Image (tube, rainbow, N blue to C red; front, side, top):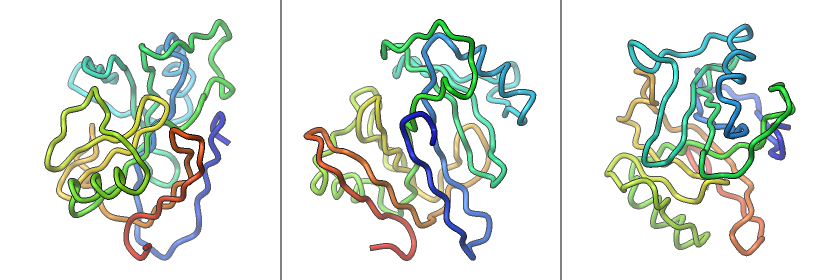
Amino acid sequence: MIGTTRLCFRSTVLQEPCYHIAVDIPNNKLGEAFDWLKSRVEILQVTETSMFSKFEAWNAESFYFYDNNGNLLEFICRLDVPNTSEQPFDISQLLYISEIGIVCDDVNGMAEKLNASYGLSYYSKQPKLDNFMVLGDEKGLFILVSPDRNWYPTGKKAKIFPLEVVFRGNEGREYILKAGAGLH
């Protein structure tokens, strides 16, 4: 469990699959989370002078690291979400998975399919690009990217791998999204 989200990994014969997953933390705990995690894993450099990302349009801040399987993880604070905490940061402060990267050959086509199938809307804080689109809201975002795009903030190319996401739509109905190679 990552907060209120269940994350399951399955064994695979695929070589070095890499997924992007963002985890929301209380919006006043970025520095504490960084200090808590830096003794456990290597935090990735974002710019020459910072290990933190600031997404002004999204009103969010984050930092990145790899898990023990090479997945790109992000701890993110969304400053528009009222979720401050007075507790010291520890693993109990991981709130939920708020982003999952979906790599697809046709980003626009996948976005249209997800809109039609699940009633997802484009994230209002992110302009649509040919190789990068975001669907959902601050409690749950699908990050659609093309295989030619690097996973930010790395030079690692996004690749298509099987992915299954169980989520609740706006009306509370549960859906199962299957994407990537070998899934229909």
